[in-house]
Image (tube, rainbow, N blue to C red; front, top):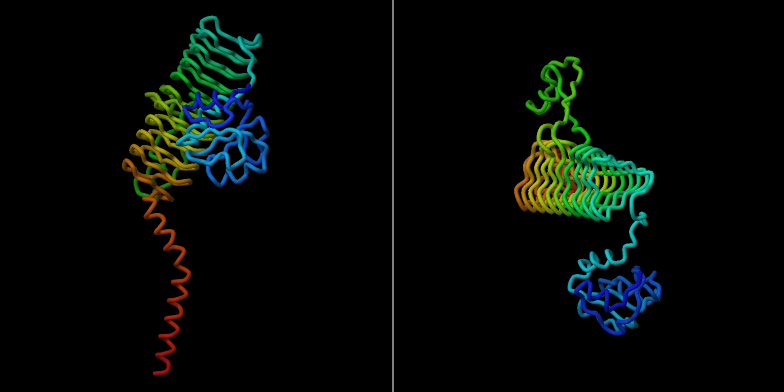
Length: 363
């Protein structure tokens, strides 16, 4: 897989300079680049490393003096990191899955498989499942009965899609994604200590032994177009209605999305986030890594949480939150700074007390 500098720039809508016929076979950090690599030096501090490698060409920022860096050619873009999206797609060799349907795959006769779909070894496609054209179903994947995937779905190995799950076009699932498991819903014959504790903010009342009865998940999972789920993401079925993920949502590894959750379009959810049942996210919400969202809360459009934030109440649109419990980031930072000042404050108070007592003794 090789492209000229000119071809890469044209595909990215970027500008090319110098010997634009230089052949590029890969990308690399500047210090590690071979003469066939495009060095990625998108900031001046990275460009300082170009001389440590052997790159003939580099991806640079607008206005960069590429000739002073000893390069034969350069590609520049107003936002180089955005250009990386297209560049990385061009250079991605994929996983090497073989075309066609592997002989060991099991396809129910009633399943509908779109034109040009690849199905890997050990994959299982259930009754009445529908796979859109141009899809890739990796090794050992499971697509359950009545599930539907839109065109160009790309499932890495060991992805499991439960019965009736509905997914739009352009879906990407990294290894180990699990869609359509039952929600975590259990109830006791009488009001439990958990329910009383929530109402009283801490008092369980009289504790009695009770067993948990299972509430089955009768709803499904509905996912929009151009959604990507990271490795080992789990999305539970709704209890009665579907758990819903909107268009363009990107979810990082090891995230749990509980039953009845609704996630608006173009949200970005980082690794190890947990979203409890029946919570709702607006559009373009960003949840930092290890954010926890309590059940039945609403997070408004364009809200952002910092890493490890714990959201226990509704969040207004556009608010930036941090901490446990979540508060406005500016307030949280002021609280943190105040906490750091406490030891010094205690020392000052102790010194003042000594001075006061010493003065009293002299009287």
